[in-house]
Amino acid sequence: MSTYGIDLGTTYSCIARLDSNGNPEVIRNNEDDSNTVASVVFFENENNVVVGQAAKENVETDGERVVQFVKREIGKRDTRTYEFDGKTYTPVEISALILTRLKNLVEAQGGTIEDVVITVPAYFGLEERSATKQAGELAGLHVLSLINEPTAAALSYCARQFQEDRTILVYDLGGGTFDVTVVKMSMTQNESGRDVQKITVLATGGDDRLGGKDWDDRLYNHILHACCDENGLTPEEIEAETRQDIRSKVEEAKRKLSKKQSAKVRIDVNGSRTEIVIKRSDFEQMTSDIVAKTMNFVDATLEKVPDAAIDTVLLVGGSTYMPMIINAVEEKFPGKVQQHDPDQAVAKGAAIYASMLVEEVGTSSAQGEENSGGEVHHAEQLTSKFTVEDQTPRSFGPGVVDTKGAKHKYVLENFIKIGEKMPAVFSKTYYPLEDNQERVLLRAFENMSTDDTLIPCVDEDGNPQATDPAHNVKLLGELVVNLPPKTSRDTPIKVTFKVDASGVHVEAVNTKTDEKFETFLRTESDIDVERSAVHQLRISSD
Ligand code: ADP
Ligand code: MG
Image 1 (cartoon, rainbow, N blue to C red):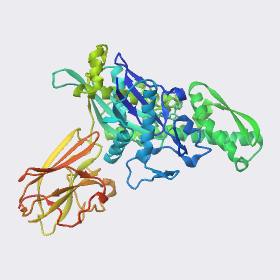
Image 2: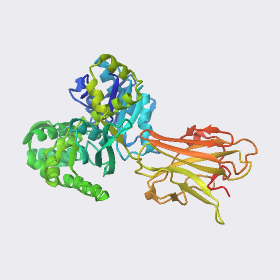
Image 3: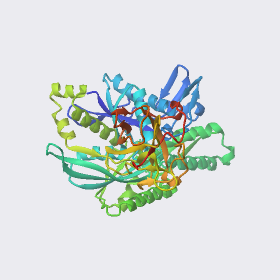
């Protein structure tokens, strides 16, 4: 089968597919003897770029040649780039290197990889989503779709525990991010009248700077001070090599403490070997405030959906292996907690979703294989049991001119509002601002507001204006709509926005000539047309 699901994580990434029985399975990373690949890239020299655990091991010694946590940068405006050996890398290109490593895992085991679904955090906006998709394409993958991480985790869980209507809280504590999502699973019927399970995201929350790394940092400080006590030194007297030695052993010690009551680490303290024993109870005590912090985010997210009664709490993310997390969540939701494949659930859910999409389309090579093999009947049964209903992560609409009233108002009309069912489509007809206008520069915005219109949004030249920062208005790109000579100001121009999990599609049709425009330009430098107030659309025909 050549259809795969990919969890492109902040600290660890994972790739999965459905096996010949239709059950999701992760492709092992034999080199690191792990189910996951560390999302860390080490630029050793111009001929060698290393991804995974080996790269991670260079964080302390060659930190300036290592890139990690790149997911935090992807799709951000004015994002930083990285330079190594005379080459410049964008976050998209670094992410593509991680995806290539995952692709190589499949190929090294004799598999072929064509269609993929990549997961993204539910709070990712459009730019982060399209940058993720771009990274996939750069890695030579055909990205069928993106899917929200908690939706994928819920899909993977429900594939095993098929149940009727449930409200699930997904508690995803990874290496550097904490995401809380409330999803609803409900039974519904598809077009062919078959019962299917629908998954809807009801609320999201969390913190993109909270994760396993915070536990690592506490443990690092604890071990550092223990080394000082053992050797009669002050922290300032501890040499850099010793600090590096501690740093490189912290994560392993933390993982040991998930299994055992105590962990031993041997550190070379300024040349003298020192053994430190950490008790799980001490580790839990020194990090109890971080556990409490995650629970506060759970409460804050639940406040957004006061009517939701949580049936199940799904623990995902590698950090939920820590017993202190399981206990804290269990205390708040007694009898409702399910630990479900913490580091694999997201990738497995993506693999299930990828197969669902391929079955729907029915054209992929994977489909052919299934039909000819005849063995994977079960896979079809499994995937045809679900539909995924994601919601728009932002509101979207064009910047237009309201000409009613004494003074022109430049507004953003929200076509599609945050939380709407995807795919979402909305069309509205506008008109050129003036007679004989040569063209329109149609600007598409995303924002966090649920209002129908935002004022002011753009200035007279159509550039984004300062609005309430809480609305987070971002110019996504522009569409140049050329108008034939002598176009009257009453010519209807129909503008359509379509939003799905992979991005926004904008098109404009001159309904007099039926000419359609859909080349959406994302950066200002792509547009070599002079900006002016004349290049606008107005709201109604007056
Ligand atoms: P991501 O943040 O990329 O989504 P994961 O969900 O795989 O990644 O979580 C990675 C985090 O989980 C890291 O901080 C890692 O140290 C931690 N982790 C993995 N396994 C364990 C374990 N057995 N005990 C404690 N922490 C773990
Ligand atoms: Mg994750």
